[in-house]
Image (tube, rainbow over the protein chains, first blue to last red):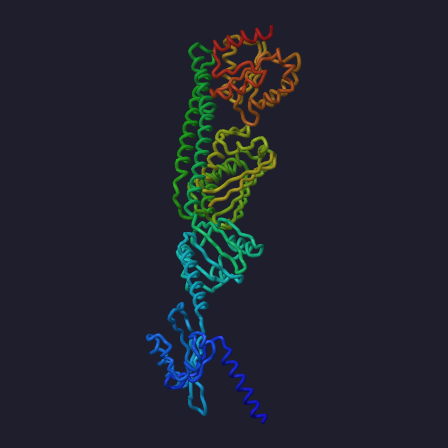
Length: 479
Length: 131
């Protein structure tokens, strides 16, 4: 009794499941004859159970689908569960997409029939297609925009890379997708890109910046937008624009320098060239009348003419240096110790006479890529200045220290304990032509001008610090 | 007549001195190659023994002619009418002439070298200024 009740119970449960299922369900024998069918199926065809039972499934199918259903039925009777999708056009209805399952019913090891379950997946299929279409459209847009675009998730793994990224960064998307951005670009960790992207993601703020990608020598303009998923990064190559800007700036600088040179040239003509000339004119005027001291007049006249010649030669030297300034040759490395030795040899006698002492403190292999003749001239001029303007109060000591510059080249300090000059008064004139800061012994105001011109023509820099009766220090950087 | 020369160039001092002597421009000449020393000299000479004429060079190291004039500013009122300053320069730059107009003590800018006719004009001007 209880077994029977359980059976009925189970039978009822099955029936309820069968009848009330939203899917179309029917039960077939080996020949495709319908043995049972549920309510939704009858509703679809608008017929009664009596009309259906005992008939073949083929009677309800469009002719072109009959072979497929037959084949699948045979497979199911071989004991495998089969599943397939078909597009069906029933008479007078919209085309539908059905997902068909054929499940074999085994009794005592052999297949007695097959349950066929048909699920209407028309809407689902349409949605899938729409999503696929949208993804494709998006992909096409991402690929066709001229900006490079990549997406990373919140763990910095690349989820999308467009063709422009592959081209600009010379990478293959198959190699990089799914990989961590910072593993792929380890040199950028801690750099500008790194900080900007982290900022964008951490603060939820879009960032817009330009930065230099050193590995490929590219200037990139970057916009990065944070989202729930991670970061979308758009960038483009602005190297050409940067180069144009740089060359424009250089042009402006050159122009400014030439303008200054011209002003200085006017100054030279006004004072240094016309000074001795005016003297010569005055002296020769005096010589037209008898003078008791004619010999002195003649001697001064001669001196004035020599001075005139010196100024003209100076100008020649300056113009030569200035002309060579733009010659961008890259000379072989020059060992500073070698050049300094030559200069010390040359200056040995005046140095001895002055009772001077040189203290050198730099590595023997310290070198630069500057022009050797210029480096010689720089050392020579600085050393002769130190000797010429040494203090009368104490013995001259010149200390030359140097070390490699972190970014290549050398940094040098050239310091003396000489008479120094009033830096506040000298101001910007220190390195100017024919500007002098000592009355005696007299110099021409040419040395430091040449030193600066030489340093700058090599792409270096020079600065000075001086205190009266303490000494003068020159700080040089030579590339 | 007492005249002071300020010029760092010894040949220029020699030349100007010789022309002043030839033209009988002045009774006494005092010359300085350092403007700082000339300043001290003037301070000591105040107010009665200031020179009638100063010839001042512009382009000098450490203290230029302009620096000299700036240092003299506090004495301007006391010097006015007693002392005429002539800038004697090799410069032919118009900017120097313009700048000189800012200094009331500067009577005129003369281009080197000094000669007879220039001195004659200066003598006339100095005498007018004094009377």
